[in-house]
Length: 316
Length: 236
Image 1 (cartoon, helix red, strand yellow):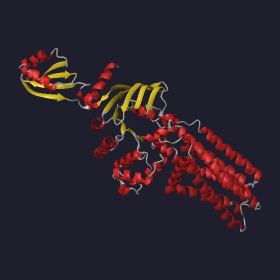
Image 2 (tube, rainbow over the protein chains, first blue to last red; image 1 turned 30 degrees about the vertical axis):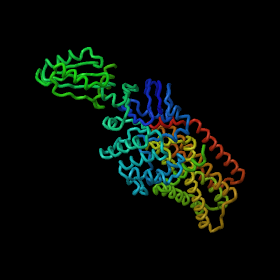
Image 3 (tube, rainbow over the protein chains, first blue to last red; image 1 turned 135 degrees about the horizontal axis):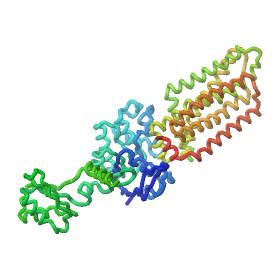
Image 4 (tube, helix red, strand yellow; image 1 turned 180 degrees about the horizontal axis):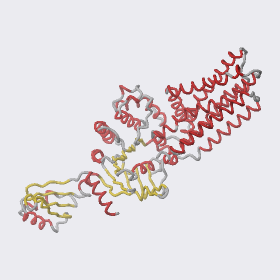
């Protein structure tokens, strides 16, 4: 079931088109990574979803409704934007208490204590947060976003400006939220490593347009299929492999790489449109191809991102 | 619009101001300086109608003191939250924009009114000491300080809040400068009215009450102009 639906979303600031025909869906429980360079339109999209900006045309719905007109729905979403949005002179407890009151949380004390334990700040709950490190503040900001037990959490660059240790801490927290509490996370970032670690679905945005949107697993496997890299003993084996694979239904493409300038090893790249690795290997081995190694290739999100950006650049 | 939420927002703003020593001290020092400045005229000027000047001073000066201190305190509640990005998160909460704005205005106006009240009390004590006479505020003056000044303070802070939320950072710098100059001008004009011992009757109080309520209504109506989009787009 989709909890976030964006259809033909356009947003113009004056004559500048910031978002151009954005379409996407996020299902309950997904951790959705919204990637793109600075100025791509990620924050604008999140602001429209939150009802802070109005779309020029198209729709951006949360639970099937527009948040800008449904104040009650806001109780079902949590927000952690680029800034912590915490009051530095106030204690951690007072910050959470203020937010809990705004969201009409029942059993405030119990809920706040639970969250402070969850983010490991209970022992320092009465200190003004001006004394906290940046990482601790970020953790508290996550607790603030969760104070009313939201079903969806919107996060805009949640680890921006944090040191690696704090980034890991925040990532682990987000993974825990998704795994244990089934919270849907809409995650804006340009940290590819982070998105690869925690997201289940990814969209890549460039200059206001979505260039790629799919499950991360599919993207990494090569767009819904499987990539195999078979190292064979010589040029004749590579050629034989090509002949054997041609005309096979599940094989989309075969590419031969002479990585050693005419020397070994020879690599045969095979793109499959489904799963069939054992059959392919069996076919090659049975056909007399001398196989040294066969590896299922997955691309990193960085490869996918750079490829997408390159393709988008060429299209222009 | 929920009264409970207005109270929650107002309470936070109030607590934030009283916990910020530098802001609090600035307000108190300003009120004390104003007491000293205006109470002096009773020893410097001869042949004045002490009671009349005293009451008109309370009527003309307390709203200006409240407004000036409200101006000092309002930056924390509105502009600071915009520059720190806090306002965006608040706007995403289940909170009507008008509730948020009015709550903030009340939370800032309340300590500003307390400061104006302290000015009134301090002024009374000092004038009594200087003139060695039993000088007490008149009925209209008491009503003015207790009822009209807080309405005026809420309306004034609400207007400042409106401009700080609706306008961009550069525009706000210009508005703040103009406001500062305007307030100083207002303080001088009020001081002049006060020193002349102009009328401090119930009719004047009714007029001032009408002005304060009209300001409050204008502030309230401006709430319809303010939108989340306008605020968010003026952040950048």
